[in-house]
Image (cartoon, rainbow, N blue to C red):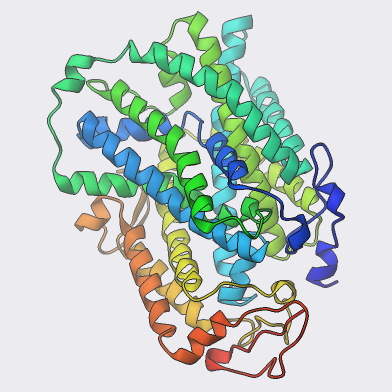
Length: 512
């Protein structure tokens, strides 16, 4: 069965609230692209109102020694800036009408795209496991406060099942339901977050905040990298997944602004609050369970809305992550409908949550390790994909779905080496500066340059970005290669030289 047959042809009326979206990864027809940037704003806002922003802010102040003004600057640049990159990738979704990793076939070739797509899927599953585990902690704490029921293995599994079931309902139904839920649920859980934040501010040690010394500029620069890696970089490979329903005439700048502001506003506030709470108290930055670390700061009557806000915010983030993971799984070649792929992803997330809560000794350590390690190959992919956008404005819809020999993007044996090799080089160089460890005694991986300034500050992913993007741009230096990427796609006719080989095994697009 071909990829096109697996994807199927989705009737237009299935992309509506309450109906199961039957479209898989095949490009959305222009007539069905009716979305606007307002949709993207709420989708990204909702995905980033979870409490995981608090420990990020805590690390800036308690562990890196910044004062609050530096932490706020770092939060602004790191969150707004990294999600501007997500917005740029979203523009590609508007052009091609397909998910990010499906569009990536045009850049890497269908076989060459497997590596970045596997990394993308692992990233999504990892974030989902973190969301699910943290939400289950919140639910268990809520049960303890309201009913006096203490945590036990059975109740832990039930808590995980409740969270993944709620995620499955929204992500399984698909795009239209997801967009609607993300907007309206944000009002509810956002209001709870504001209520709790107002109470927490009263707990701030303002004397410690106002008299904290400034950290060196090098620490601030490194902090920007940490926040970017922990926020927008982790979402970059999902940028086009929601933007594929954007109207073709929506200006790209508005899409970038929607992603940057939608995610940046809640992240800036949460990271800033985490920094305020950690002035003079490093308990949040070093907590193995960030839910409990905040809960102990609150009386029981305020802990209830806090835990509800924590659970809801994580659910909104997980909705988008699981939806994206399902599309990524299909891009990898899993022979399943989108809703089935979502279900498979949920099962894996549940297994990961059980491991974290019932087997693993530490929660936050593996979380930071996970971010630092996967940020390297993801950033290398982002660099190549964005560099490709400099010379591309169209994607061939039929070519994206043809993954066999003779397809528009088959290149040389399914690989476009001018993109694959820069990506691999970026990954290798980035890992040279990377340390992946949960503690000083539990080192997963350590590159030979991990003790350099870049390595110590967790900036190996920046080296990956520079190397991968720079090498790819060098491969596009030849006019023939730039022309091959720029070649427009006309849906109504096929050019006379269609299929003619050009540089690096590319061909002039065969228009559908």
